[in-house]
Image (cartoon, rainbow, N blue to C red; front, top):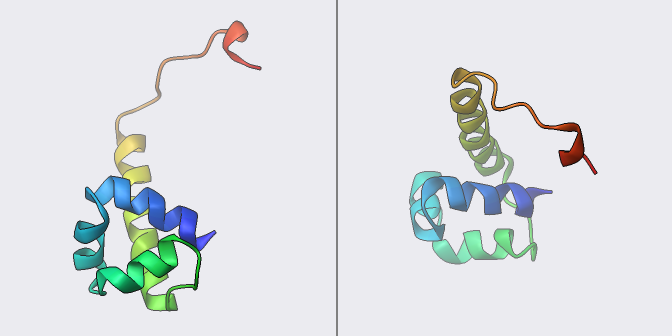
Length: 74
């Protein structure tokens, strides 16, 4: 779970180096967490969740997206 969240954060923050800088960790540590070799400390995980929640809030502020057609659902 942590690895997937960190992978999403990499995309949102523009890459692994940028995310490591934002989280104030070494890129080597982040690599271990992203590759699920170990888990991040709670404080790092919480900061990563802030990235996810900020993106959620950003998208919510845009309003509802286009409605899907019934044929779009599988």
